[in-house]
Length: 257
Length: 116
Image (cartoon, rainbow over the protein chains, first blue to last red):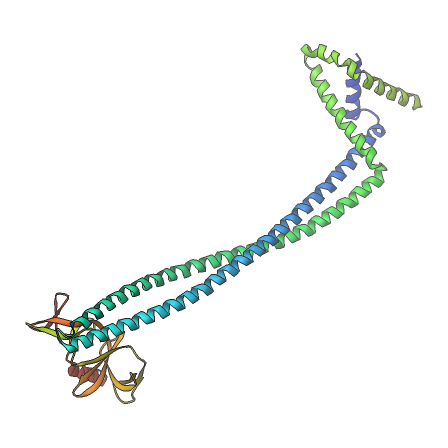
């Protein structure tokens, strides 16, 4: 019986059947808590966007370093091409010298000029192979130039996008600051209107949450016939609560005209 | 048959034989200066001014030859080989192929006619 009255009393409280002024205290506390939660959430969002802004700035620094590295690659490639050109020029000159040596050998006639012709052929052959290798190096450098161009385009594109993201994050931070300020204002007004001190509001809101949870649990239990005995076993635990609520009701009845 | 001493040059894509006694030297393609009113150009080669006749469109070498007692440069050619080559009926053999000799005087004449 006691439990049935408790459930009934709780239902009356949350169904709004009781006088509006009696439930207003709970609503005020819940409103106050909601405002506080919103304010806290706005601050958390602002902190998160500030962290994102810091990450974007860090990413931008890294991309700047990548752009510098690509520029350095271009500069090194130019140096390598210069040495490659010098080597090619020297080899061409060696080949020319070998051609002239072969010509001198031929002019001396056979057999006097034969050794010179053979040496000249050998030198020309080696110079030709070295020139072939340099040609392949040149082709590789051409391919590397294309790859570097592509890399530079991609890095510059990433740099531009990071700048866009950083700008968007700055805008987001500005909006979040506005939201945070507005919510602080709302919270202050709620506090002023409800005239509730934060600690009491927190306790009332928690009590309301627990009461709702208790009501749900007891309703679920009472809906199962086989659990009636279990519901009864809660009597000693819930007894003090029932007494407290009864005293509260009695006081209110005494106070009412 | 004996051997022919000289060099094989590519002229307009064709291999031709130049006897060693006709050739003075081989050089990388030098800077050429046009001579107004003449199809020949001038080149500074090994400290001397040499008249140059253009035989072909492209070629990395300038071959300085003696023709009619004069020194003349042949430009637009590529030297392929130097040394001794087996003589054949029409000239020499190079890489198993017959190679005809290059008539320097005739080539210079042609160069002069082409630009006339």
